[in-house]
Length: 496
Image (cartoon, rainbow, N blue to C red):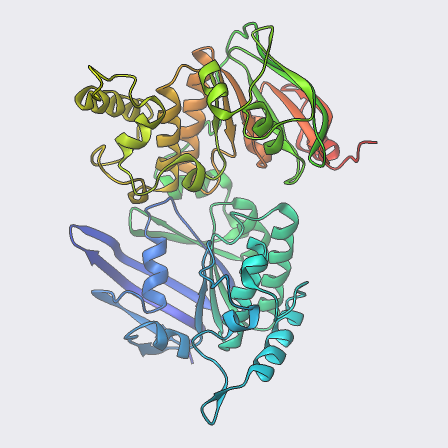
């Protein structure tokens, strides 16, 4: 019998004009957590779909327990004990948890669905996962982390012995990620094999014993997690060394641009004060739920504070709605770029020009030629990788979508740029490019507020770091004195 529960050899998948996978290999042992890493576009998603029977490879072979298999579709993969849990759970929000768990493989006796038994089975599965919700709860009322737990329960209900987790921590808080780690550890103990896809090195080091890297649709190598350095892993993923992942430029800090004094919104944050100068990057950090995003939303007029003042270039300013903030030069690049930063079905050019639509009008008609020229230049300025400005935003990777959001901001008169989790869900190569853009903006004299949960990012890019916990500012550190331990201590400090 083979030592591998799953093995793929020479897998090639071709779409019209694109070789999505080019002779890739993969081996998975029983009870192993095997990380799969690579930049966006490396072929990871296509690879999952080959394993789960969604796509059929043109070349190559797949083996389960040493026996060759040829899946005709997803049902074959499910019957063989393979299940995938995706970053964005594909659930039915109006149905119960139990109904979602057993969707497509309901327990039926004499033509009648056995609701009571399904609820009991679902309750047992949720108990195994330490879930804090009931099988009769409505799916739409659950958090993203809880919905992922339901997807894992669904996989277990099909007696899956191979579970693929696709970017499962991307939308989770630190505590929720820890809970997911605990679940994966238990799956491993129970002999379930896990393929774990993530951009986060901490996920890999915490969970996996082995990591395989894909680059440009090709297999690069398989490595022992304990035997590979961050630098070597980055080089394998991007094909080059990123010597300075955080290209923080030395910038002459200018005068104060934005100052927040005693900003309060009942139930969200209290007495928050900080400032940011021209050419300065101020990191705003803390554990998820600390109130960071809520503060900047009040600064930008998305919500109304109950107390406090905002000063722009030394003068008190009153911002009642987002359009006021934009007119005054305060731009927020939101955390959820797909829902709040872009219209995903629109072309890139239309997205970029949306805030300034009509600005270049002649005699009441939009000058579309002029707008296209401006959009093309703005997209080129941030090195967006796309075929044309007419490509829909859906066609781009996460990193390139973020660049379009930045290009949209560059088309406006800016003074303060607020970036909320700008590298969330993007690969290491795209991260370096976004940091470069951030540094270029600082050199041009923009005041930048960087909201991030990633400690290396905050430490690597910030001139000053403002730390929040429980809706309050618990401390401020300059670049030279800041350490990961110091920030965490402040982030976990319960202000009185």
